[in-house]
Image (cartoon, rainbow over all chains, first blue to last red; front, top):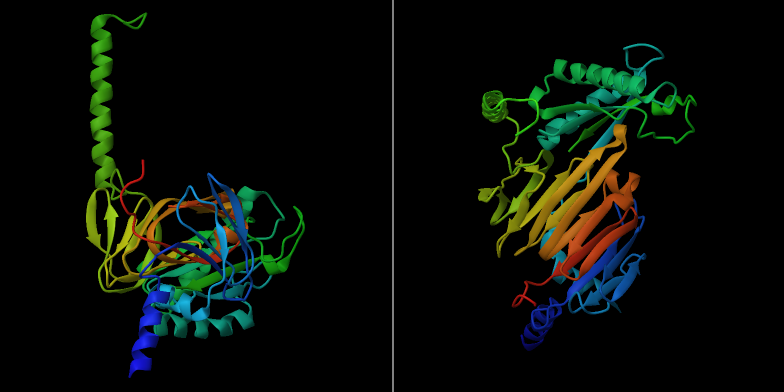
Length: 197
Length: 170
């Protein structure tokens, strides 16, 4: 019983009750990759670029200091916020047959999974985004990608998805899957992405 | 007085402008676009626990799941609250209890190469998981915190904790 009380007490202390500090900790993204951020204040700058790497500082007039932080402590401090994280959006990429308003057979088959996902999540937040490759002017591609996106939205509406749940937009040539120089054809970029959130 | 106009003409012109201004504002309000003091939609509330609210245009509003999050909103959680928000670019934000997050600016228009994200993590605990904006334009992300400004060198995810401010500093 005493041991239990002691470990509960240390957990509370770990949560920083006694002496709460400002804290920044790097975490990996869903794919496991870690980024790099920089904190800048009057005392200078400090970078974080490794998973689990942490900085602590008393206030904006203090220099940042590196800090080791255990998984247990992270859970104690950030447990509530972590539990409140939304489910990551699920994305489907649909392709059209060449120069046609018809989806490819593979993409047609994917539609069933799209609809199941919408139902499972009771999602009212579906984003349909059209994309093109870099052949053609940005303005032309903005228009073409929107046309393609609208075609996919029509299909989803036809399958019973609520109109108010769908946002239909286009990114033109500005968001390629496979980056290419201008005016280079790349079929993998000529796509409609359906994201269910 | 402007040169070339008589006093009467000037007064008439000002009156016309005033009428059009009033008409314009009435139309704007009726059109359903965000009222002055609100921004465009930048995200959605995806899940909540306990007491959560949105401070918008001076009013405190409830923020249940499915609530639209607008530019200029401040998200707040109570002592038992937690909230998960998804921004339009799939940036994922989560707040633990006793937290405040001001979403000052968010612009994500890849077709026009327009990106901006300026938020203030004022107090509490935060989980930030980068979305497309951080991937396409990390330099456009600026996060103000009580201890300095956080900028991104590349798309990044992190957690942060800023205890409640004590007495205001000089």
